[in-house]
Length: 472
Image (cartoon, rainbow, N blue to C red):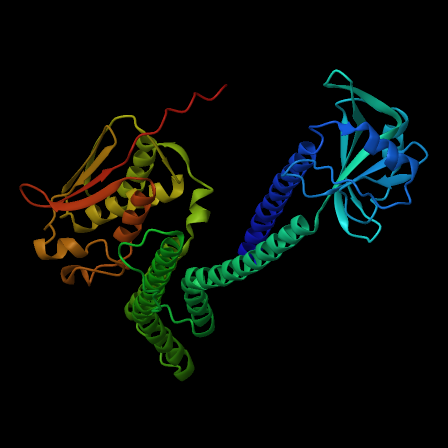
């Protein structure tokens, strides 16, 4: 409809302009024919006889030239019109402008207008001063303007109006065909252009109805238009949603598996304690103490696992609200204090240089604590852990058994635990949290076997502008 309306407006403007231009040209030609008729002066005797008796039909055969095909009449100041010699029958209707010309004739000034004759036929009229010529005895003649009379020359407009009517009909037909064609072409183009949008709409409705994220919109590889970009964006979105759903399902499955072991052990220990109370058979003090210690350890493990799951489930928006410029040196020192409490028998050395990063303080400290916890967990009794921070690169090196080369690609996977560490406490989420936190801070983390044995963890974080000192 928009295309058809635009074309209709353009065609109408062109057609109307064309019609008026042709009308002007045809009227110019008619006016030229009328002007050719006044090139000569009229015979005085013929004019006198015409004015004396307007009731008589003209008998003179005076010619106004071969180009003039109209008829002539003389109008007096009182509005009375008289046919002139050589004219056809029928008088042109006189107007006030014609009477004004007769009352005050002005040489070389004529007015053109459209009018009708006594039979109602359209004519083009030229009203001008009446100039006559009187012969002298010696030859030649004298020209003068007749007072209280004017010359009216008229040419029929039937042919001109017929031509204009035919032109208008042709323009109307051509315009109608053009508008219909433009509307049909616009409809075809719109349907062809919006077909991918229809497919995209159906795909979105299918996903909303069935939650099937495997739907993809076919897109040509070389297509670069807006529809192709929209389709690629939709395919990328559904692919990301499908991947997110798979990760979510995997996280739920892994969390359920990890929770099952401590819950089973906790339930078994509690049932033993409950049965002892119900049956009146007391458990030996040593065994009772061991059961209570086991219950406490399982509760601690459950609390740690739930905390890790909550950390992994937090959205990006929640993290972004707490991001600020923090001192990496101070964060590492706080993590070291906690690590020394967990491994009092170990020697932990630190060489820390000032460095500032943009991160969430609590999450960054938790990530560094997780790295140090791994070093404490796998370090031999009385061993040494070396910590160094230099220009945004934090390294933590222990002297434990190290990580086998075939296990290094999996150390940052959720719930992954080395077979040799299955008996040790932990949920397998610590390094996964480390990787996610460092990535959100714009850095990178890696684990590798250290020269001489042990494991070396490396964290690289981009620097941030140093915050201004706080006012006292």
